Length: 472
Ligand code: GDP
Image 1 (tube, protein in one colour):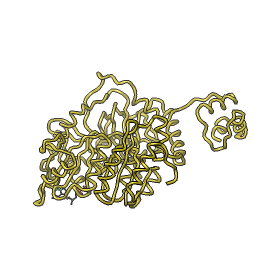
Image 2 (tube, rainbow, N blue to C red):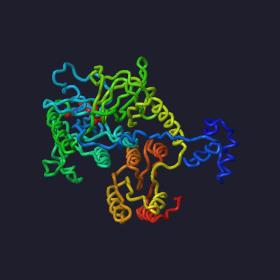
Image 3 (cartoon, rainbow, N blue to C red):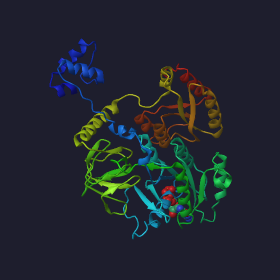
Image 4 (cartoon, protein in one colour):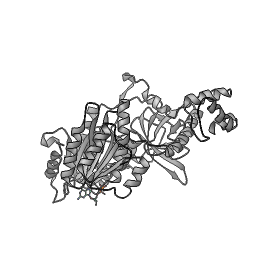
């Protein structure tokens, strides 16, 4: 139908041309690239493909080490609710004023950069919690270099603490622990460290390699030292970017402002963004009309690891969408349109994530090496028993990774983690909670529930042998 409009040829003619080629098609069917070329040729047209992922080409461009300069680390703060994530981000925001600048950070733009006394900078994503982190990762964005995980010393290593740890580990992002609320009389930081040690997370005071610092986000105690440890850890990552090229990066947040139109906060990850640049971000594009930083200052250009709020994009891209500067405005617009189309199709497209049924097929094709599993169960004993049995199933061809395991129902956060890591969720004597089921359906995440350990193990085994029947 679309091709018929583009070529101005009756749709029935296109269908019969396809039939001549031996293909039975319907009006709304999508043709692959090869068929499109042949069919168009029949009518004297030449096909030119515009890729929807041109920015990936930019990412893959050859990197010359000489062009690279050190850049600030980008940090996310995660942890259990009420353990002090917001307080920590607020304290850092208020106390760290760029040298010689009066007034702190006044605007909430979704991210901010601070400079320590020694001149080193850190960029924080100002959306506490792992939802934002995982939602971004589910969209394919790798933004965070380092995670601060806040644990309240008057509480315990809680379910969301464990989740945050799993999320960071699944993303391969180093962790620095902030043991918070040490001003409280009940605080017992050593207990937290002991608990972490029990989870195989040895912090430095316990002879391990993981950085950790005792802080009070409320009073500011230890925050400076925490940030120094963050920088130390970041140094090991040798973060670098080339500032002297057109900018690429990721959208942090976007909204419609009644007075100013669409406002998007973006994080420049490589290159430099200038006023007047034409950018493509997700399904939207536009010329950068104005930029301001988290201090409300107008700025003309933004280099690597800088968050900026941008005016001029013709819509609100989603958090986690990548952006890139385009020289050719028309090309950027064409790609934006194409993406909108693809997005529409994707919502009716089948299976995006791995399911147990598909594993056998993929193993047969030889393109499958790892199966990520999220395991939720009613009691600790079952978690351990299933973990053991699943791990024993790993073979030379396929490795089973349990990326997160815990006692409790299947939550939204589990589904988001599954989506970001392409994992299947296995529930033992537990069910999905709240919106988890709806989100799983939307994200096409395979959730399997069992009440007999043997069944769970057998299904996984059968899947790995490619014999799982679709109906279970
Ligand atoms: P979040 O849910 O992790 O963002 O936690 P919040 O930052 O909102 O903190 C939850 C509660 O703990 C608030 O009432 C804070 O005032 C309090 N709080 C956070 N950090 C500290 C701290 O270092 N010491 C004390 N005493 N209270 C804190």
